[in-house]
Image 1 (cartoon, helix red, strand yellow):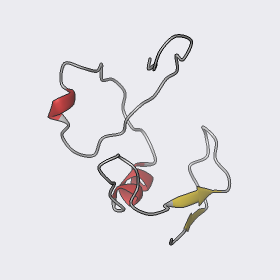
Image 2 (cartoon, rainbow, N blue to C red; image 1 turned 135 degrees about the horizontal axis):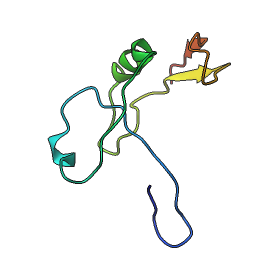
Image 3 (tube, helix red, strand yellow; image 1 turned 180 degrees about the horizontal axis):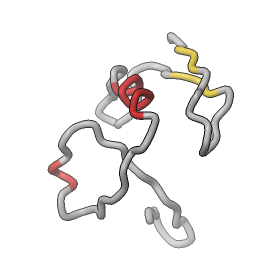
Image 4 (cartoon, rainbow, N blue to C red; image 1 turned 135 degrees about the vertical axis):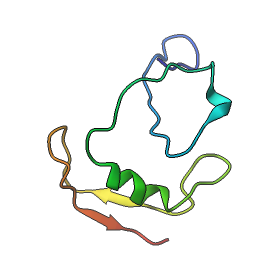
Length: 78
């Protein structure tokens, strides 16, 4: 659960590809990536800024659902 004040509850998750020791003791970790790690590895190659935002536009998804990991990926250069 994540929130930024009253009536703002939501959820968020992180898929980490490296050790994140600064998060130890701050978050509960569970789950396992069953499929699609190739997509995560593709996205991580683009890096991020100090604000945890991608350093360039990454992709658009034309079609996606819980059972279909055959996504059409298009790289968008700024």
